[in-house]
Length: 553
Image 1 (spheres, rainbow, N blue to C red):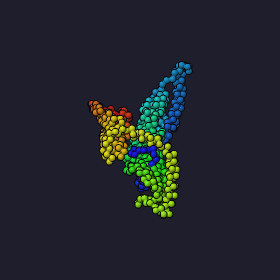
Image 2: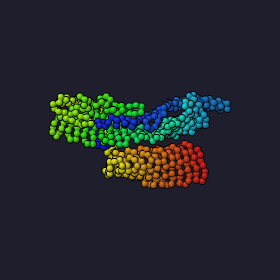
Image 3: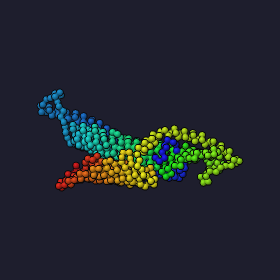
Image 4: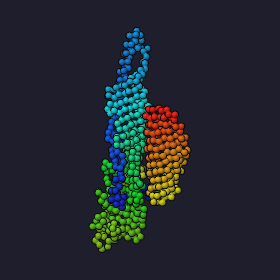
């Protein structure tokens, strides 16, 4: 942060009302669930409204399968006993042995769900597929003793889920591809940690922790507009954390203004245009309320108290010279009336102040002079009371400020040639990597540039110090990836070329070949089709250099 003496408390003071209101359209949130409720949000992405208790249906179907298996086993024993009695063979119950009954068949459950595939003693066992009667959803893959166990693909009208199951439960990374006909998105979620990465077609993305319904809990959202929010979420929406866009930073607690807008309830605000650093409280529409404080580059500090509808009441300004202006707003027909303390002369003069004509001294014999001194005495107690109330709220968001400061200052930009005009800069990081190219007002890699690491070089687009957009990675071994990047990861579409001559072109997620793609070996063999976590998975076709074709692998 620029001018980050962050533990002092600051206001939004001289930011004009129209300037703040213009920011409202820059505040975004989103709230999607894995199995339902996609909602539209301003300037990026959309939400799909639906929802089913698939976990409950799976549990019910499994219980049905167990009951059917027991009934089939009972009937099978009756048939075996009848066959033995007919042939004259007599066996006691002690020496009768259960025989494995392996079939390929279709099972129909009482709920209407059906299973088609391999069975063992009446249970799904081996390759097969379950079709759910409620919505036509199909679960295809490996089953073991009636439960999904192995790689599975679940196809719904609105999404496809691919991943590994153990004892009927998804484990490891699960890939979800959503498509409601209007919006497509890809999510990869780790079932053990809860961490997930969501990539939207408009290049909005989320990386972090979400609940079982896909609502965000903790992590980072990167919006198409360039806004990022990194922190904690409440009901899937930004709650406490760090909001950034083009050098503008807000840190604190956020709340909803409307279905499509959020605002900073209280916290820290940095304006890259004015370089003002602010702490304060706000109401919907980013209207200032209560205590606010702003620190400016000229080392002046201004405190203010606001009432409802951003009505200013008191102003207390500490100038770098030591002078202090203490005034009350809208008194006796003037914008502000109070006193000015002159540190050089130690005089306390009654004054009137307005933004057009500035500060004017009130003559001593003017009746307004005594009123001005009386108004001035109201200011300090009101400011102190407002500051005390703000500090009590501030404690809950202070850790986010500390974390942000630690993250920012850990980048040792010792060899810095930043010219302050958002143009070109050279940055050296604590990990030994270096950047050359365009930067934002916070001297972060932002725009076109080149970053050189110990194991390779990236050339392309950056956003707030992250590789984001179009770019090319070249490793020290000569291997390359050229295509889409999001939050420092190769995610989207692109092309790999390896040092051995093999290549891949298609969809990727977090550097892994995942989705549709084409892999070409140096010898001329080609596989084109579905991939999951760098492996061939799903439908595909392999064409050998000699012309031989294997389809459907």
